[in-house]
Image (cartoon, rainbow, N blue to C red; front, side):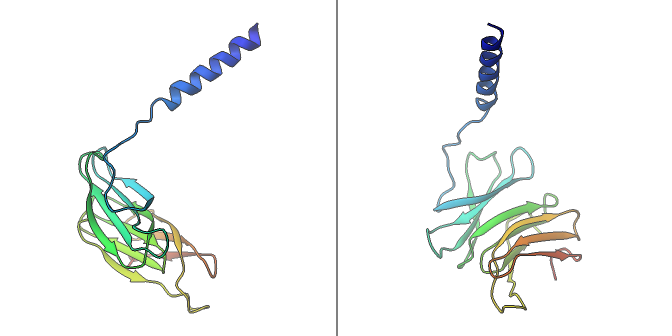
Length: 158
């Protein structure tokens, strides 16, 4: 019937769409959990996460071959990575637990970090999202003690 053919077409179309994803079995070593991914282009990308179930360190890894292999570029004590964003091939940011705000200006090879303390509670927040609209203006969002969105207009320096 007409409805059976329509249903069959929808199922086949869905199967074709899902079939376009492939599993990369190379993996990124040292992770318990990966929570963030950001690719600058087809080959260069970053993943971030943690090396432990509870209270682990944050890990950032980089690939230059589309994910076939990964190199750890940063381990950040007690601050699992929750999100990564690059403005261009050199300038990137990562955020995470314990108020982590990390910045790279050399394509992710080295990272400088700072930890934000909420002035209202005196506690370190958990940041879950980072996005920059240009090299100066960016936003991070999250919270644990207080939900918040923070804005920078100087490339993450302040």
